[in-house]
Image 1 (cartoon, rainbow, N blue to C red):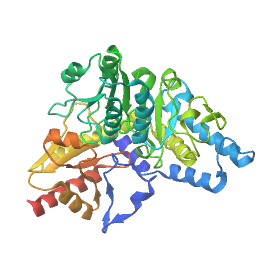
Image 2 (cartoon, helix red, strand yellow; image 1 turned 60 degrees about the horizontal axis):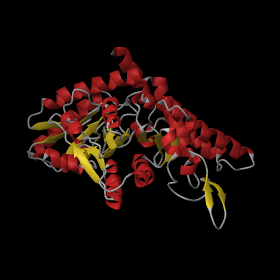
Image 3 (cartoon, rainbow, N blue to C red; image 1 turned 90 degrees about the horizontal axis):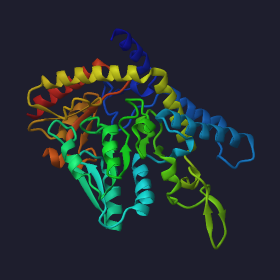
Image 4 (tube, rainbow, N blue to C red; image 1 turned 180 degrees about the horizontal axis):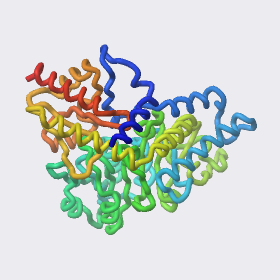
Length: 409
């Protein structure tokens, strides 16, 4: 691990946000499951665009428009390669994971779901992968069904299999829980869903910075993720969809770019992906995402996984030494996220004390109220780790939690 520690010590220096102090303390940023910090290469690339390349894309008849368009569409190719898409046209640009799910629900869902159909999700889903399906189900008369989870935070696969049926038309689930850190068996669950004729949407928001994703090998029909959890900018996300399915889907929004021809009487629509990208796009979002992907690929996912798993193991062992502390989610396969509570203390109070110690965590229900109901709690404190963290951050977390216990219990 010594070589890895040296490598990631250098990587930490790439994040300007970590040079600051908080409440007079060294900043330990442990909220990467909410959003990752941004490396200098991403900041510099976006700055370069705004300084030297700023222009709208696709139709400008000048130099700046040409280089902006090349960078924008180059990002689409980069993203397609990053997740293993067969064609770059299978990459649709949206504002984030949540809009990605809404996009699929309001295009494929409204076209294909009908009364009596079922949409199968899991109890650990983010609200962004629950509410859009509820809204569509209400419109068409379909039903949202949830597979349960086991006490260790893994999906109850027996329950999942039992709830699959000929009524199931869409199976939507996360690749990695944003609360429990549980990594799901995407390929296995997809195969089971396809066996009953259902389509599959995977929420990849938490997984894309951890593992090399191959959507073709996984055989998922849709895969959605956000750039801001991938060391990229806010307000930009990606929907991958199999080309044949995308070709059958109606437009999501109307306006410029997505048209082929417009008359007062009728509009015909462009081919994918342009058909789904109405209006001026988030150009710097695409360019910044491409830079973030290059940053990750230059490190290497094998190294990232080994380093983050070492941090997770160290943090789990240290936290479990604290009396009255309970960790939620002890799956055999999990990402670098730990959700916990101090028995008898409110999670928000713990979070505030940690903040005063320079430790940035999340406290609340994490947009997973059904999961909280399953766990029988209102919320948790969540610490999540990334490439810029180290054991000093873990030690700061543990020390701050011990102090919170002394003050609150």
